[in-house]
Length: 141
Image (tube, rainbow, N blue to C red):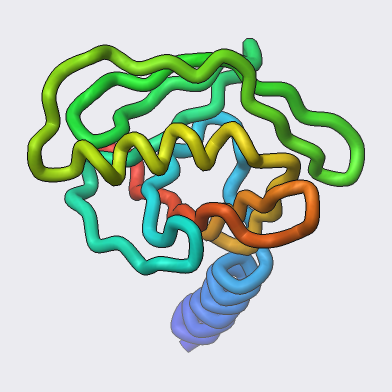
């Protein structure tokens, strides 16, 4: 009976911990794979292996646009300021999402800040207008 009470109490504590973290724990900017879900106020439905960004600790950024690899650098400073520098991509032809890829890479150039809420990353311009929204992808197992 005593063991059963301990297990019930432990289960309740674990449930509270998981619930608290799931509603209050923000994913880190760095080392999270961010997947594009909205660009310039337009919802986009894209395969998980496209339009992804990964911020590295060394202030480099990598990822995939439509079918091209994306790379460059970024800087962060106080008040969640974020700037991308020298974003480049490989030059493969991407018939399905080629135009969106161009809009995506150009839009990154206007980013001035970011906000993370749970598993959502919002990039905004200098006026606070949302440029892009990403969601964190689950790590590969």
